[in-house]
Amino acid sequence: MSLPLKELIKIGQTQLKEAGVGDADRDARDLYCFLDKIDTVGLMMHWQDTLQDNACEAYFDLIQRRAAGEPMQYITGVQEFMGIPFKVTPQVLIPRQDTETLVETLLSYAKDKPGASLIDVCTGSGCIAVSLAHYGNFAQVTASDISSAALLVAKENAADNHASVQFFES
Image 1 (cartoon, rainbow, N blue to C red):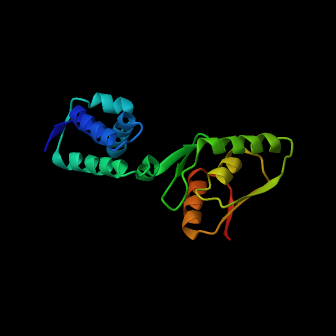
Image 2 (image 1 turned 90 degrees about the vertical axis):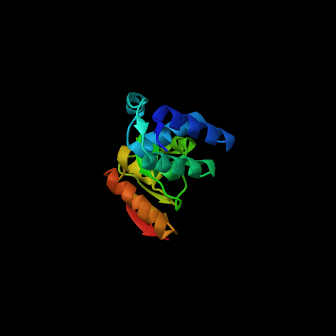
Image 3 (image 1 turned 90 degrees about the horizontal axis):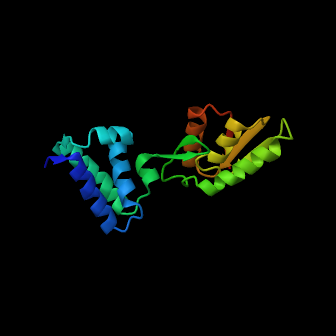
């Protein structure tokens, strides 16, 4: 079934609304942008395009995952935190905006203590440790987690964001 992009998005929005997804309109657009690796400007530029069956099927697969309650961040694999993109998987919690307040408080506190060290226990995605290492002036940032799968995600986030963090499983 070939469909114009604007019709495809409209169907996706309807399906997400019927599933009770809070921001169905945005999620439907964002899922297509993720699928086609474009931004919202690119979406508008292709608004009149007709999509072939395989693109429609791939889009509806994403819509079904979202309609089933899977968080957008696990579908797209990324969540921004402190202005930094973080990889997220079901093995880690999704970084939340309110946790940024903690990081901002620590950065403010450490400003007067050059060379301080810190440890992030239960690091998960590493968003706290990586952000502190990225923005702070710490002598050492260490992060630990009991989950080896979570540590793999955190290490990847540290490497992707050029943050010097030592990790250990505990």
